[in-house]
Length: 378
Image (cartoon, rainbow, N blue to C red):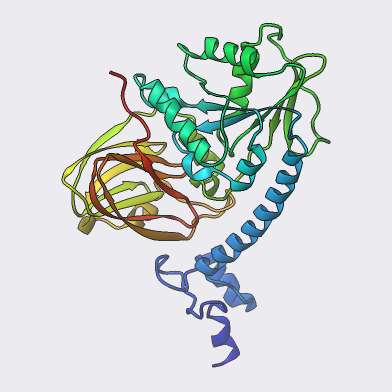
């Protein structure tokens, strides 16, 4: 093989480089292909390039997380932790190291965006569900609170401040990226009677991992800790613009759809759930991408159609035009209703039965099954 011929293949996978079919081996963009031919640079195909970038991101994420763990260990025993979760997607985002750090620490769990789902939730069921999830990861919360719930928020948070928070110690607000930690801080501050309407925000540029610090007494402050990541949230794999479009919705309307064998649920080019085997029944979807949702028979659809339509394209590092995907097939036999969560996208509530489900989504996105995540209030 000549030098020119060698330069026209991906050095990692060996596929011949081409720009005609983005879903065949060796694909690179036409611009990169032309540049590659002009200067004979060694160039990876898109798939191998994204795998290489993912490896680099994983190394960086590991390094940064280790620094965050060391920082949080220094806070043990010095105050109260407020752990914020986004109820639309939180089960895949637990971090074992952070759970170990918070073991035996005073921790209040705050559920954000619960009001966006359904106005008439069984609040007791949701609170018990979240408590069990945290206990299973080694964190025994003092209480579980709701924010963005006008009916319960004021009295619940006020009571928590009196009963559980020592105002002579700092309050540390933690949680996964994009869970709504700033919203939680605002809710706590407006319910703290001695706090002014215009809080003083201290300069935190020289403080590692602290994104905001607001005094609440002469001896203490409420501090927002930089969001942690285990790399499993789909929200981290889309552009900033698309992420804001997903999480800025004022209301997430549940979608009720019928399913059976060979039915496919698509969320633009973002994710696809193929029910290879499923009982003939109805399911409920709670998702940030419901405006992009379509239901089709598997035979009449390809996941790549969503990508080609540019409805909702997975991206890496908030800048690349496309991203590698993977398909995960799971088999389940359940004798009770259950939930299937795609991290950063939402969840599907499925009736009991026997299922074979193939899920296609960006590489590394977390998938979790659990008990039914919510029920309606009677």
